[in-house]
Length: 270
Image (cartoon, rainbow, N blue to C red; front, side):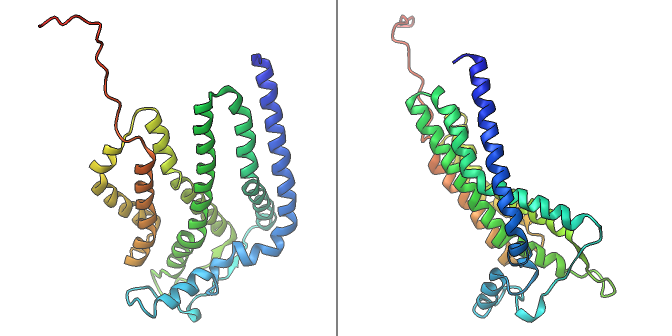
């Protein structure tokens, strides 16, 4: 295929992706009003599944924060005339994009695969599949663990008894999207190291050498993500981050290739 043929094929790939995103966004436009309270705003109530599980765990683990059902209920306020409508649109589009991710990966794979050798195609196919799976797992981690813990800490933090927390819809949605997206990207760490290994930049001895540094780095990252600072939150967030490091160690090449000596060179010093 010529350059212009490739460009035309890429144009149709983008068109099919856009049609799929718009179609699923239309489905989201219908579903979002029915699931907004029970899914998007679920973390504002003590009925959220994560809080209930932690409340039960608190009966056996003494150092857990208080997750009792009576102590947490947050009202979300709207302070702008257009915020609810724009949130409706943006959430529908986010729903459409999330549901279309498998199809987007398939379209991208279909576009690049003809230009790859068989061994390259196998590696790229693995990267697409694994990367998509890890991104979804990271988003689920953000939704069920990271965002609820951070939201609950920040909403219950009290600088003064005379200050009442009033959370706007804009603020809630901004933090909701940001934290879930951050966790989705963090879970791409094994894929990044796999790519670096294929480029000859990282090998398994690197992970053995810096394992202790990785433990400290995971704790620091968890401390930045979860500002509460309690041992439980640090443990819950830092363990998955460190496990990503260990998974990455299994995905990279074991040893750098040894430089082969050129047998045709004369032995000058014999």
